Length: 159
Image (cartoon, rainbow, N blue to C red; front, side):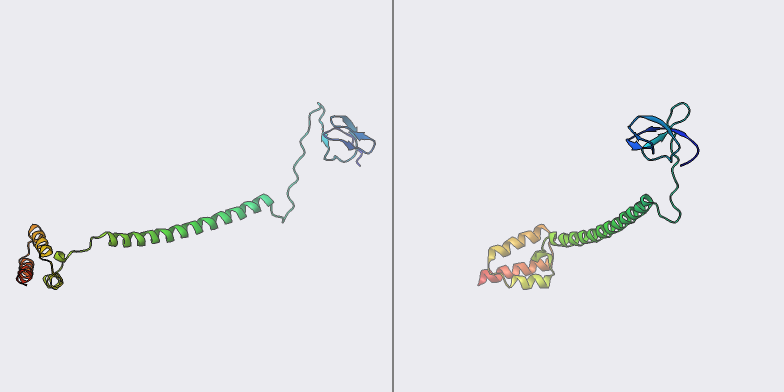
């Protein structure tokens, strides 16, 4: 208790040392202001309570939580970037493989004369050899390839 009397308004029901005060009741007392009491000035207006500073040495919970949240966000971003990089590398690898698979298988006419000659030895159908001759004449028309094709055709026809 203090020697100085002050005027308050009850913002909730509470006991002022004399009697129970109901919400909204205005009264004068010399007790320390309770949480259920609003201090009034001379005109009857509520005087705001000064906010007590946080005790020294103790971290502000909001600041601490914000720091924790920031660290968590940074960790998630780093993990996201690492996974994104890994996935982009994997995509590039798969696209390269797919590109290689999409290349048409070179036919016998795209190979060297020696490889073409070896391939022709496996053929036993004159029609297939004739089709290859027409394709070679319509394409590169290599003299050595045409000679090998004609020789195989003649060999199959003579057999």
